[in-house]
Structures are given as C-alpha cells and as structure tokens.
Amino acid sequence: MGEEEEQALTPAIQPGGAASAATRAPRPGSIPVPDALNLVLKSLDDAKAEDIVPIDIAGKSPLGDHMVVASGRSHRHVSAIADRLIQDLKDHDIYPRVEGLPNCDWVLIDAGDIVVHVFRPEVRSFYNLEKMWQIEALNAPALADA
Image (cartoon, rainbow, N blue to C red):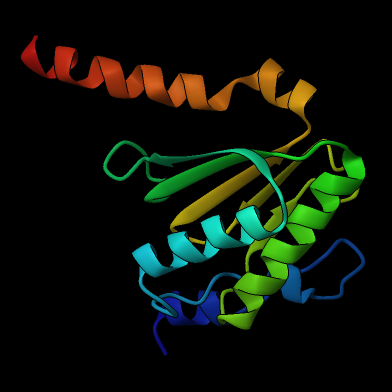
C-alpha cells in the first residue's frame, strides 16, 4: 500500500485518542470533482443556506479545486447546514475533516478538492473570504501581462 493510500485510510486522532468518522481523510477519487461540487451545492441549498458562492481556486491554491462560502442565519442554522452537508458527503463515501462545529460561528468542511466555509453573517462579513479570492482572480490577468 502506498503512502497516499495509507494516509487516506488512516483516521485523524482526536485529542482524547479516539478516531472520529467526521475527521477521516477524504477518499481520493470517490466521486469526480464536478459531481462532488454539485453534491455540495445541492446539500447547501436543501439546508436553506444563504448567499452560496462557489469559487474556482484550481491552479490558484494548493488547498483544492473549489471553495464554497455560505451563510446560516444563526448558530443553530450553521450547525444544521454543516451536519446535513457532512452526512450527504459521507453518504457518497467522502469523509470530510471538520473544524468549528462546536461553536458554529464559522464551520470549515474540508472535503478534499472542495473546501466549504459556513458562516454566521456577521462572521462572514468580518473575514470576507470571497472578496479576497475574487480580487486575486481579477488581478491574475494583470499580473500575467506584467
């Protein structure tokens, strides 16, 4: 078994020593990236996430191919959106890594080539991630000409 396969099968260990299914590495190649992106967008829409913004970061960042930013109306709504997305991903054999679920101000769901950020509106406007990535996309052609 190669090192990449072994890492994908090895669950992340929680501080208490127990491995959680929600923190296992995504399985490479479980479904194609466009299908996974459609799954993420549908799940967010079904959970009534607001202001869903998919951002193509392929070739711009080693983080993945796509970033999706969405908002929930409250802590409880952010939690419900994240829980539904995590379950939908697991149903398709994608086991994301999750950060921020206990507080639900900003939940980051790393599904391999797709990274999802679910924010409360106040937190989203403070960090303004989509603006940062859109500015980079707008400046990229100008930088290429220089």
